[in-house]
Image 1 (cartoon, one colour):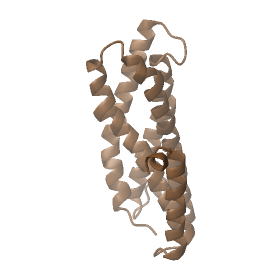
Image 2 (image 1 turned 45 degrees about the vertical axis):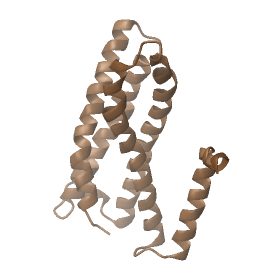
Image 3 (image 1 turned 90 degrees about the vertical axis):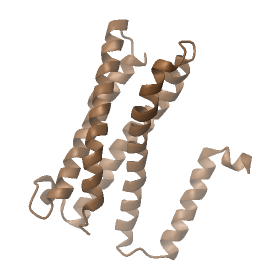
Length: 187
């Protein structure tokens, strides 16, 4: 058992096979394409927001307590890996959400905040702002702060602060965004 559960890729493949068996054996209360898209949207969203909360609830508050000789373990190995899944989770969450809205016929109505679609529209706009922050503010600043790209110490410190502020901004925005997403039922 330890060998199986020690192999993340194998665990994910078996989990995917199990999910597909359920998908094909027990039909959802919707079109199969929509069911699969929503499942993927939720998976990518959990990855994205789960890592956002990991950074804000665990890594950022804990780093000042980590002894200096141990910090490279986080900054050189854990953080870059987590940031990879964080930014791609954001991109794939937005992409699958947009496809769901488009295939369900309410993408334009949501983005233009048409009555009846205001709740999901606000949620979508918040998610778009958050994804923008991930890709165009947090990630470029984290690359400097973590030394992935060369930067002087003062630039690294400023970049770390900027990344933290926008990460906390995303944490703030995630609460109303999740409410909007969970409570819209548009088909």
